[in-house]
Length: 476
Ligand SMILES: Cc1cc2nc3c(=O)[nH]c(=O)nc-3n(C[C@H](O)[C@H](O)[C@H](O)COP(=O)(O)OP(=O)(O)OC[C@H]3O[C@@H](n4cnc5c(N)ncnc54)[C@H](O)[C@@H]3O)c2cc1C
Image 1 (cartoon, rainbow, N blue to C red):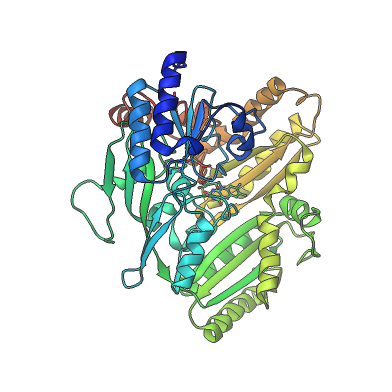
Image 2: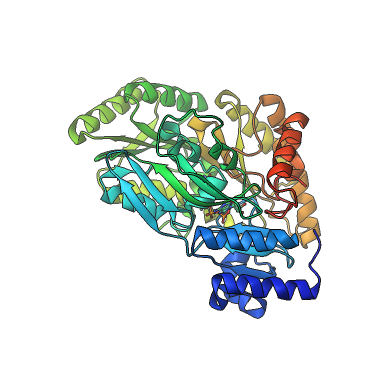
């Protein structure tokens, strides 16, 4: 969609300013002070950045934009990793940052009502203060927002036990492209009265509507948490251990994060990791595991016994169990230090899914194929194995191939082909949890059939006929 003529731009800016007040509409050079909204070190590219404080204001902003065919890119914490938040100089950025109120907690029904701009960590803390547990958890917890988590159907570290964001949402309030407010603030776990419309907006990456409020589902609090780091000589040991712990810990296993040796070394040798590695650095595979329950003594006993049995049976080669919160944090840091590859220059990041049984061979084949093209390669693999989800980080470390943006893009495309092509035959996905955004849309056909894409486009057309919401994301 093109730029508005100058006089219509001025008219729109005036209108938006009257909706949110002048101090909450940012344009021109002042955008430079809002660098977090332009994270890929791009120059600030937007017609305006508007920060409403209520659903009514969001509705008025969208109605004004839609009337002129003005495109709008919604921003939460801007931690997304697929370019879903990218804007051009023709777009209005709608940031939910001032809509960050936790409106209430219903302890008896185990629900929390929040505005969409609430930071995930604040929601987790509020749940804990009410002696409840909000189970969505991911590395960007201190910056990402509930609206962004809903728009991307975020996954993270506890999907194994609690499911993705979709499973944590009971009700939603969404503002449609033309400003219509859809209030679907259901509190009930069971509600089959017609279509479950909220599901349409969860994972729609800001292309179908702007999420303004949500009713979240809370879980019972867990007073006992066990954490351990395990090491393995073979991939089959990892999957055997996952199977055994899933059944022996009575459903309390809440995380099982696999780490390949390449990532373990990079993470623990990185200057940001300030402790000595919890285990020797020579094992081919590691796993950070966590179990959550309500009986400290019994849970600890069961956890230690299960690990002891697995070690005796030869399923685990080495292990360290956290004896304090501090030790647990050090173990988690190994897995969460995902920026340790930043020092190697250009890097391509992936969040693929594929059957667990195919993972070991897929990674071996991929590494061999990559090395043929990129002998200095940095290749790091880790992920949520129980969800069939691996994260890959690939740094070519070849200045001749990444000397400018054009070359880097070309190389990125070549690497994308190597990563994505085999997934189709394996029944995997090019995106397990981050979404499509702009950077994966050329590969959507590998994970969605033509009929599926056509239905997605029909939905987009009927909810946003002028195509004003998050243009150019997921598909063109
Ligand atoms: C260190 C790190 C670790 C991460 N780990 C994980 C992980 O384990 N699992 C995982 O799933 N993701 C992970 N991510 C990715 C990211 O944090 C998630 O995608 C998160 O849900 C994005 O939330 P956000 O508020 O930052 O959204 P943004 O980045 O602001 O936006 C993401 C998308 O959602 C849209 N959007 C945002 N808010 C709204 C709204 N209110 N209404 C409609 N659309 C909206 C945007 O337009 C954009 O398309 C990680 C990121 C980092 C940096």
